[in-house]
Length: 600
Image (cartoon, rainbow, N blue to C red; front, top):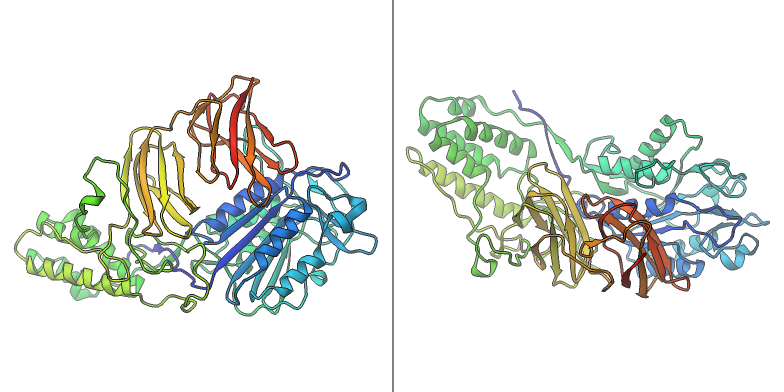
C-alpha cells in the first residue's frame, strides 16, 4: 500500500526571461478624477509575488504615481530590446478615460480629462509599442473600469470601450485580462479599521489565487494565465461583486505559465515491493540494513513517487528501529555536508558564507532535499534554454553518486554501527562547493545582511525551521539589510554563490535625523516621534523613474503602519504617521537617496 501523498515544488519552467512592468496610479491632479486607494496596494502585492523567485521569478519594474511622460518612457524602455523567447507582463491599475472620438486613455497623475491627447497615455500608443516588441509572449492585465458612472467603492471611467477590439493589434501570443466588462465598474476593496489598505477586487483575487496555489486547477505545480484568470473570475462571481472579468487571446499558442504554485505538485508514493518490505520487517538487523541500502538507491531515482516512498519508509526506520539501523536510515535521509573550509569560519561566529556554487543560475535541485529552488530573475540574453520541463541535470547525476556511495557504506556497515558519512556537496558544475545555505539561531530580533558580489540581482530565502514559513528577498543588488522580528532557528538559501549572508544581532538603533543611501534595504529601527508627530522622509536624489514609494513598518511585528509616494517635481518631503507605534523603520525602497527626520 502506498503511503500518504506528499508535495514537491514544480521544476523551473525554463521558458526564457521573465519580465514584468507594474504601473499603478492613485493620485490625480485633476479634481474631477477620484483619488484611488487600491493601486498602491495592488502594485506592492503583485510586484512582490511576481518577483518572488520561488513563485513568479520575474524581474519587475514598478512605476507608482508617475506622470504620463514617465509612464510612456517606462513602457518604451521596458519593451525595447527584448528577445523572441521573453515572457512579458504589463499591468496597469488606474482610471480609464475616452475622448469624444471614443479613443481610450489611461490616466496618469497629471492627466486632465479635457486634455487627454496631451496628458493621457493612449491605449493605441501602448498597443503600437506591444506590436513593435519582439517578444512572442505578452500578457496585458488592466485593472481599470470603463463604465459611465462614479459609484462609492468603484474606480471611475467613461463609456463602454470595447477592450477586445482595442488590444487586438498584430502581436502574436498576446493575452489581455481586464477586471470588468466595458459597461461595469472595477471595484476597490473596502478598508477595515486597524488593517492594511486592501487592494482592488480583481487584483486581490489574482494575487490570492497565485499566492495560495488555489489557482492551480490541475495540480501540476504551475499556474498559467488561464488558471489565474479562471480563479479570479470564480472568486469575484462568488463574492457577488457586480463586475465580470474578461479575457481575450490573440494568436496565443500553447500555455503561458505565469507562476509556480507555492503548494507544489501532489505526489502519491509508489508501492514498496513486498520483498523489500519483508526485508524491512526482518528480525535480523543485517537484513534490515540491506533493505535500507536498497531504499537509498530509490532516493536517486528520477521518479518522485519512488523518492517519496523511500523517504517515508526510511523515516519510519529512523524513528523506530534500533540505533544501528536507525542511524543508517538517517544518514541516507540527511547526508552530512562536507567540512567547512577556514574561510567559512567556526561555529558561533558571524561570517560571510556563500550560497551553493553553480555555473548556471537556471537549475533544478532535488525537490526533497534542502537545496534552494528558484527561478532566476533574468538569465543572460541568448542563453541556451531547455525544454518546457527540465531534463536530468549534472546535479541530478551527482546526486545519484552521493546516494549510491551512501548506500554502499550502509551495506558495508551491516552488523556494525553506521556513524557518519562525509560528502562533497558540490554544485551542478561538478566543482566542490560550499554548503547549500546555512542555519542561523536568533534569541532576539535581528537583521539579515546580504552582499551581492555578482553582476546580476540575487535572491535569498530564509525559512523558520520551527514553522516552515519562508521569507523571500528577491532582486538584491549591492549591500542590503532586512529586519527580522521572529526568533528561533532559521535556514537561509541563496540562488547564487556570490550572494553572501551575515546575521547582525539586534534591530539596530538609528537616531533621527539620519540619511540613507539608495538600495540599502531596511533602515535600522528608530524611535518614532510622539503623537501627533510624523516621520518626514525627504528625497535628496530620485531614481530614474522620478518616483519613490516608502513604507513605515512597526519594529515589533513588521506590520505596515503607513505608506506614501514622492514624485519628482512635487514636494520632496513625505510625512508618514507612526500611528502610535513607539519604534519603527522604513522598509526596503528602490533607487532614492533620503533624509529621515522627525516632525513634532
